[in-house]
Image 1 (cartoon, rainbow, N blue to C red):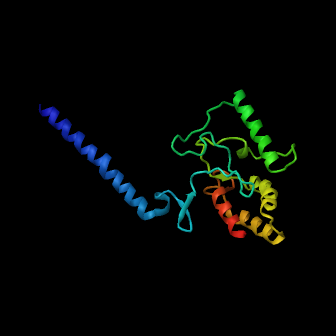
Image 2 (image 1 turned 180 degrees about the vertical axis):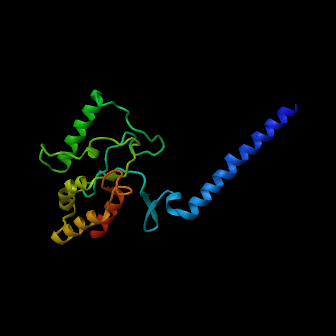
Image 3 (image 1 turned 30 degrees about the vertical axis):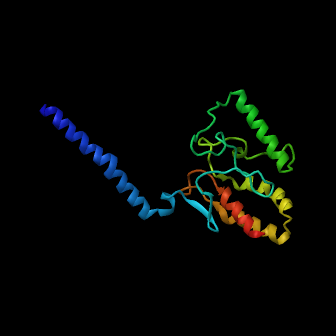
Length: 190
């Protein structure tokens, strides 16, 4: 009986420590040091939340930059990729379909080299970024859809340059642009 009581005390102690004290401590530190990130990095337009900087969204309008494909239809609850291997025929068909769709949607030459993020899904299915090259390939479609003049086109190109993020710690990953932030900046040009 003595061993059972000691075991229960240890169980209760570690339950309180790891189940209540530690999560509250970490949450408190996160709220103090990184309040925006700790609360989901929401992007607010006016008084309405339009999305999160951390979660990709689908943009189908010709007036907006397109996000990369998503295996979970941009739903954050079942986050995940397709898990298709490189030799899977379904993946090949999907990539070919995405390439054709991207080329036709953006009125590009059918031999154009498409950035990989525009034809492959991310591992989470929720990546909010594209490369600057992918953004520039969509530029003509957006300028035409919004009837931008030369000055507005220059502002849009400047937005792409300003919103381009460097690789993390200057060595991890590649340059990238958050699609939601780019689309909101594009709205401000008009």
